Image 1 (cartoon, rainbow, N blue to C red):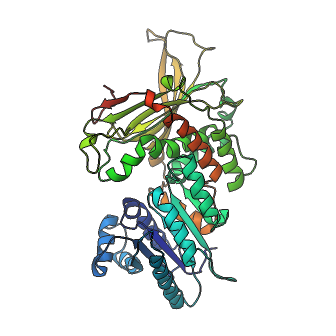
Image 2 (image 1 turned 135 degrees about the vertical axis):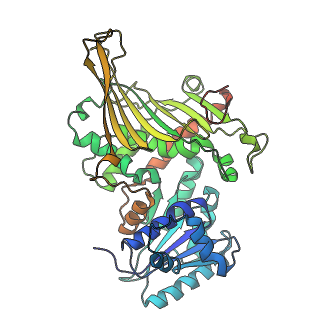
Length: 464
């Protein structure tokens, strides 16, 4: 049953890219679908000065709403519920002003509302924001049977193991673990979730899902665009921290984890954390053979980038999981910006060492296509009497777009918001996951000075 308690969404960084492209369009869609209470408000908290008369129009323009996708009256009514609160992240007085605004809205609702704080800001700002939420009393939920208070934090959650632990300790002094939602929106993608269904619902694959039958796994996340207007953020992060610690390792966990005893948030997140705990730590000797980093040509001329920047915009990593199921099986993680195409794809290579009957590379390959053209493909082999090679490869394919029974949600933030409102943490990362993944990434970063930074031309993956 839908919670009918009024809900206020407070978005820190409302003028940013994630808020404009993901969070606000998701809220609009949920509003139109009647998935959120009709009594709601959205407050954009930002240090930027915006003319209040122009605020709502600029928000609407930045959302990029496709003509005809929603009824005009629905869009107008939704935008009329968005308010602007100028405030500085490091100044307590700004938060007391925000508190007054929330109390005014609650007075209008005639009850204490749910409060969902959505932090779409750089990790360096989290400490000040969380402290000031506490000082101002904004972190205190309603008394009695009033609404809840929860906090969503967009990735990256820190820059290192140390910073992640520091942020978490600060959060847990103010919020309970059940109030904290550390998000990686990739986990909420329908196609990513179907990896688990494919593995655990098809008995023909799960018995083969181990080191005895799989030779290697290759996970790719390519972007054809460069860093665009995100230079000030990206140059502090780089590709490995941006997508390696989050998206790619989360996909790795879904591919390799054991089946949870119960499919709830506690057991699901525990099994993922068990995989991250078993990642083989990189050292000075092993990094030479397992890591490549590079930067696209012209990166140093991008806006807000230093001419001496050594930030990697592409990386390729070979990692191993030291457990019974996967020991000595390589998992390749690869991704970056300004590459030859935009796609996210997983290739699972089954070994053929015991069944090879010709000179062909008779290897079965299972491919999950996450985007674009979402689907699943299996390469298999058949005998062809009219071929000189005798055996020919064929592909068995399924595309989500070809089936009327599958409707993929293009905005995974809808699922994130609904789950946070329901208190369901399954698709949000636990602190243990963050600590183990950062520990692994830190082992690479602390040794990667030994690896030269290659250069590649935009639209290529050929490192010079």
